Length: 578
Ligand SMILES: Cc1cc2nc3c(=O)[nH]c(=O)nc-3n(C[C@H](O)[C@H](O)[C@H](O)COP(=O)(O)O)c2cc1C
Ligand code: SF4
Image 1: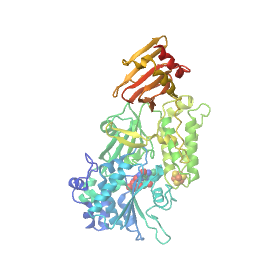
Image 2: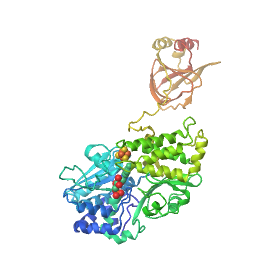
Image 3: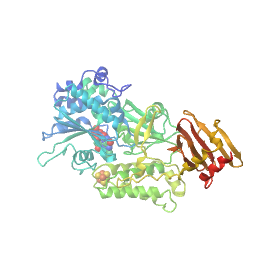
Image 4: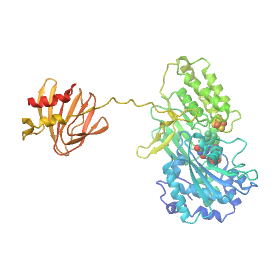
């Protein structure tokens, strides 16, 4: 029985998925009672893979037993946690397990509609999901079910379950009041009908088919008693082989970092972040098993199993700065203490790098800001700050003291690792650098303007001169092969008869140069811009301009010579001297 989610290469069809995994878990589940399936899930010990590790069976049972007969199933594929890429990898490799899990869930709780909340930017994953849904519909496995894939915004809060429901209903990723959990008030609720929603992470749903097929014991045989099964671990940051790896839950962080991910780049492991939602793990805590229970005993957590490795070159004050800013910016400002506390934390840590603003109590103030953020909070975002920032200070206090003693010290910035893609060839994550321009009100500043290059050329028309030129001896001459016509001091006149296919070596001018088109037309690439130069036109290139010919007419005649004021009128005079 296969309890692993990630194949060696992506399943290309539902058929290839079934070949490896056994008969359709959807058909098996339909022969089972909802209660029977819930029992299997409870016995398997499956815990939610989205963040908190809540027992999936308990959640499913709550919805199953809910007095309201109208229920929804919602798949959380928003994946906004920094350092996490596992849901996208899963959807690329094996969307079938996710869709099977969703259809089993709909059967269990009696839902007619399934929503998949996924970021609009996850184009490849949306495509894979659409393909899987299409195949299953064609196979008549979901004739009575409506499945909607809802592309959502880039915000971190989109993945918070109450915000996700709000996004589905109202198009805004703003968490609802805390006292309305989705299993009590689901989607499109009315006063008499709360319509509970079963919200689980994509990976959580994906584990269900193998439990239905193979039973709970096989699943429990993998992983630990605390966290049975496999986990999709994302390892990013300062490691040689970043990526998503599926291993039995409870593998030690040391093995994950040193064996699986190839060890740290540059020096040793100073610390590991578990996304931004749990306390930092110090380098001397790497023997901790990576499961929910064990990590919580060292003040951290498994979260969505996205581990960001930090090597010894990293400044932990810079890490605190990045995390504080991320949470401050992403806070939605519905609960004043949250935005305000996080702003204090973020701005205070920023100030620690500025001798004008750094103060002996900066660390205390940052702690106060982060700890005061969770008050009457609708969601857990500020709780993350209140755990992570103090843990950084607590475990790396000497670094904070050193920074305070020398605020001019300017260690390298640490950008929050938001993973936007995985480059399979280079075996590297691609980082989303847009966040640097995101403001606390969720608008984006315009990135600093790239300095406009000074005008590269001026075009002059010298048809009149060409007409004059045509009467010169030179023009009448048969021998018009490319040659240097005149070379004296700083004056150099080169006539080039170019043919199609000629390649001019790209070169860089040292002083102003003018190019005159005597015949034909060429297309030039000048410092990245393309322009066409027609017969009778002249172009002046200032120093430092790179230029190369891209295409030309047959028999294009070009003269290149040092440019000087008025050179457009000097041309015929010069040629007349030849
Ligand atoms: C700020 C914030 C962001 C979250 N982002 C995600 C996310 O991107 N994906 C996810 O599955 N859960 C996310 N969660 C957790 C969800 O609220 C919820 O607990 C989860 O979807 C439940 O599914 P599970 O029980 O299968 O883990 C987030 C929570 C918070 C507080
Ligand atoms: S706690 Fe913060 S992030 Fe969560 S809803 Fe309130 S203001 Fe928004």
